[in-house]
Figure 1: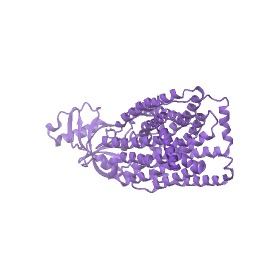
Figure 2: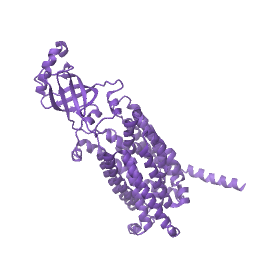
Figure 3: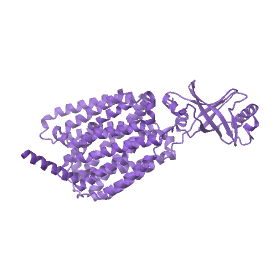
Figure 4: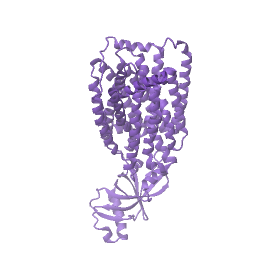
Length: 575
């Protein structure tokens, strides 16, 4: 009887907590906020790849964004602690996050310089695109380029160095082989106009070049079918095609300095900066608001935070399917449908967040002096080092996991490319619903039972196992199982980060300390992104994850060793 009464009281308290209006609104905010940013953070690197950016360029863009985030979080934390404008900044950041994410889906591709060779002889005219190991097409890419029937026509323009010589050779020979009704009236005086060429991929790779057969040439509304030349003629040309894959194949290498001078880059980068500042500002504010609402139940933070995983998983699965559905029979993926999904989530989140009660605390006179004293404590320093590592490892999966999945697909599982975005979205669903959500929900119980320092070791071990499985898989579908480990790697890590930072922070300086934690996290994210980009570019994705497997294993052993050496101080250090 007593047991029955106990459980009735227990579940009654839990039910009342669930119906708590403030906490319910906080759960909805976490859901809508993660849904708004999930598509950008998940598909961002592969979207940048489609816009024409290389791995190295993406790495440096991500480093710049993490540096911006690194500066934003502590500044925002200090501002809201001092001026008590938490609610106002919270709503502004939600609005700018959604608007910038919406317009990111409509930015322009890089205008890449292309260099090809037009080869016109007595039998056939071809456009030759030379390749090496850096831009050679996989079998999967060739099938995508050629279409379902193996014969795709692409309207392209060529700007050649000496059009007049080419025209005279092509005209004279073609006119002998065609009827006047086929050719029409040719006006040789307009030799400065571009040539409109329909390309056919002959799937012939020889001497390090792809050869696209010219089916016909249109000049001044006059058509020459299957053009040939009386005398063999070769000349370098600039190519302009609506096919991003052909443009990327023919693109000449461009330096970082050249990219920075392009308006397309600044359009893309400026929107990314606004998005990153905004979502970093929300990150610095939302978790302390949640802790304030929990009052004397901080261990229930994970049960609120798990709604981030629910939103992330459901929206990425829907977004991946939408991209694949609207990209059917297209050479490149169409991301525009998800922009309206982002906009709707932003509008709903503004309404929800405006009704969340926010507690403002008065800043203590010695806040910054007390915060800097934390650097004199060994257990706090080790905590900061662990956060740095967490940032390095998280940046790898954030920036290059989807890129790696697409590389595996083109190499081993070409047939999966048609639904690769759906697979990527469902991988986020797996990590959210089967990995993060249960761990977030139970994180308070786990931390209470095994303490913060052992949770840190567990997080590093989860990253080690996760990276190892990435390095040995050849079928991207296995990522659905591997991503379940993200519960221990990410969810438990974030819960420990926020919980312990609140425990070590001086009174009335929770936002400042959390901003400092965010700064250290962003240093790790920026370093990890650049390091990963160079390793990936030079050694490939397999070695990238293999090397980080070794590194994470070493750091896990060092963390366990540190835990054993400081075991005698457990009672004096609230760890």
